[in-house]
Structure formats: structure tokens, C-alpha cells
Image 1 (tube, helix red, strand yellow):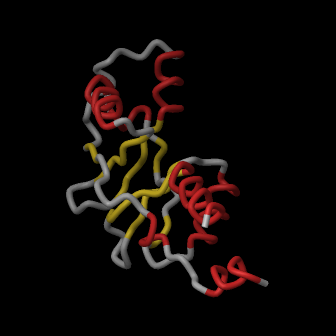
Image 2: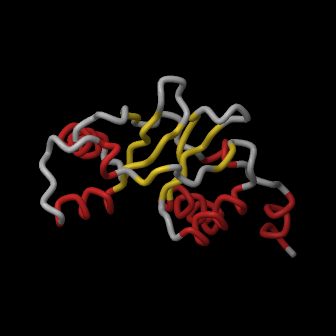
Length: 138
């Protein structure tokens, strides 16, 4: 089977590839600040969290496009444009499970939570493509 077979024996966890420095905002954060941070950090989403750090929603590039198309002002709060109750994965989940969730829900970003439901990272389609690139070039 060669080296590909050996790689399949080593299960990769979401914690192995997730980005730990997640940009988060509160429910009232205005679109102007959200878009500034997305641009500044070159990211495609921010996670809306409550006071305890649990994800309430996610604002993605798609959400920003929809908000602009509807003519919403830059002062519009995050809660008005976020996707509520985002699909999440646990940091202990297998990468293959996360990819399956992403494909099934047709989303490109998944907040990562710990066993208490607190945000600990994020994985994106780009992270999976980076992983595939590394595995295929080895």
C-alpha cells in the first residue's frame, strides 16, 4: 500500500489542524468593525460568542455580501446578519468527520469547541486544502 496506507492508520484530529487564534465578536459588534477585522487578519469569518466564550453564531464573507446586497448600513449589529447556532466540531473529532459536516451543510468554516462547548479554534475549507496539499506532496 505504500506511504498512503500508513497515513490512513494515523487518525488526524481537528485539534491537529485548527487555527487557535479565532477572531471573535459580540452580538452587538457593527458590520464596519467585523469587515475591518476580517480584512486586517485576512480571514473569511468571525465567530460571535457569548460572555462565556460559547459560539452563538458566525459571520462569513457570504453574510457580508448578503448584508451589502440588502443595503444594510455599516452600523448593523452582528446578530442581524450572523448564521445562528453554527454547526461546530469538537477539537477531538476526526478530520474526516469535520469534512463530512462541512460538505453536508455546504459551509466553509466550522467553529471548534471543547467538551464544555467553549470556542477553542476554527477550521476552514482552506485548512483542509492545506492538509491535502501536504499529504499529497509527501
